Image (cartoon, rainbow, N blue to C red):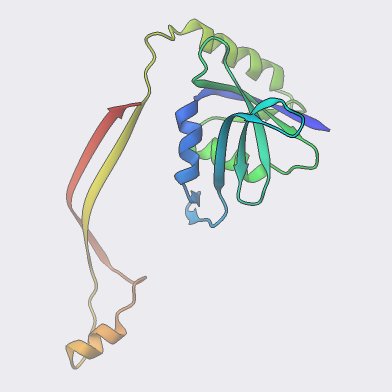
Amino acid sequence: MSTNYAISSFIHLDELKALTKIRSLGDTDSINGIVEVKINHINDINQKVNYIKDSLGNYLIFYLSDDNENYVISFDRFGQNNPDLIIDYIQEHCEVNLISEHEEHYQSTLRSSFNNFKSKSLDKLKTFRFTRTQTIVDYQTIKALTEDEAINQMELENWQDEEILSSDTESREL
């Protein structure tokens, strides 16, 4: 059994690969995440496949555009594989929606994403990554008789005030 997923907007391959470095979903850190993105992997039946795999061993096969192999255009799930964690990571961090072929808006999402992709001049599209570095000072007030006693009472989670001392944003073209 398989399921195809349409993407609301095609994903640049570099964005998908970057998911291997992310260990948070929503507001929480996660020990489970994306561990591998492979292109042109030769599988057990000697076929070339592209896949994304999570730390639990689940995976999705993905397909690249014939026009521009830097863009992921759809995903497939095969067998009893449970790709929910992968889908959550893709949707949150790539800012897209994955629509299952069993959902009502699958066909319209498929058509729309292909039409939007085709209508853009691919030669002019560039991908940029922005990195913001901040220096932050946190303050914590503790009442104690000695400095050593205050240090022993200090808790990492109960910082009360925060001040951003500097912030720098860099961008680079991928």
